[in-house]
Amino acid sequence: MFHSNLDKKNFSMKQKILGLCASCGNYSLADLSKELNTSIPTITKVVGELIDDGFLMDMGKIDTNGGRRPSIFGLNPSAGYLVGINERNNGVSIAVTDFKGELIANNDSLDITIEPTEESFRNLNAAVKKYLNDNNIAQSKVLAYGINLSGRVNKDTGTCFNYNIGDDVPVMEMLEKSGFDAPVYLENDSRAMTYGEYIYSPESKGQDMLFLNVSWGLGMGMILNGKLHYGKSGFSGEIGHIPVLENNQICRCGKTGCLETGASGQALHRMVLDKLSSGRKSMLSAKFNRQEKIGIKDIMNAVMHEDVLAIETLEEIGIILGRSISGFINLFNPDQVVIGGGLAAAEEYLMLPVRAALQKYSLSSIKKDTVVRFSKLGMKAGPLGACVLSRSKLLGLL
Figure 1: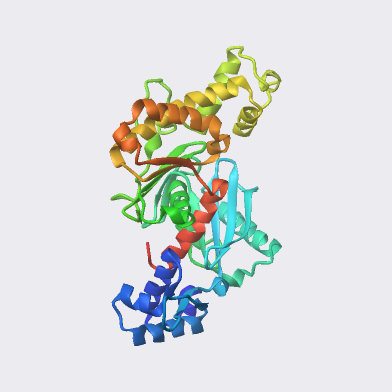
Figure 2: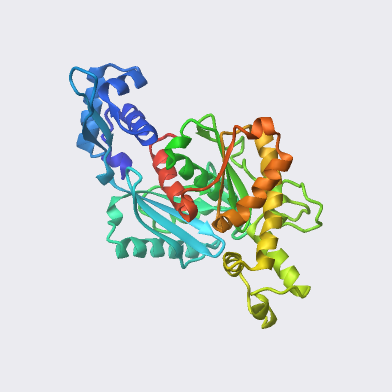
């Protein structure tokens, strides 16, 4: 729909202008001319065509120190919608934004599970369409869908290795048969969360950022030199499988000692259940003794209710995580390290042991230049990241 609505004349220049407005905000004609090294008459003509196409709009005049007040131009929010879908351990979350990236609707727990079958993706498509319809969002106005999966996503081949859905599953092939009526873009969940945090945090622009997705598993996304880092094969950020622990715990990958076995939601879950099995007391004890299922939500709820066992275990996770972050700071010397994902909801119960480990293990001369903080987007980082990533891919920026 995007390419058909965007007049093919001056197509490359139009993509560049839309890309600049998507990445950096509003521009005057003079600024666009300077940025793109193109004459003002040409820029004026192309901007006029983009306004006619419905993708740009005149945002009004800006104040100057003298002379004529120039108009500035920015993305037209009414150009269409972007839909972001983020796979989670127990379902999916979804967000819809306008073309400018403003949130229109979101749901953190859409009740559907992604499996490696065409039927599953058809069900996902049906659930998404129902969600759009329930929120009065016209499907015909959707410009792109972004879908985040955990694991190693190959954006070039459209395949994914994911512990939930299998080995090198041809996800894109299945999606093409599932009925989505606009371009669909696949991405790794941690990388999408990173991009979302970067785009929606103006103070992050131009800064190197490491984003740790501490959820059921553990992954990392990186913004280096202003760009989302993929690595040679597109699989960068698999920090959960760095073999640094001597705990003899078998990881999902089949190896032992992976960082994920000591610093993730599944590690927290396993450690809490082990302590309950040994007879330790907790507000979870009654449920455990009744042999009822205890999930990560139950444990996080116990943390927030100041359960000693749950907090103690989370502190162990935080120390391991903080020690690892120290290594990443020493290695990358980033401007920011952002902690997101499900465990970030514990806030200071997690951050206090992380900071204690940072103080102990990182080089002070390097650490002082790095801000360590929680994600500002929280659980919306994944689906919002999918929205703006799909826009950037649609515009040819990635």
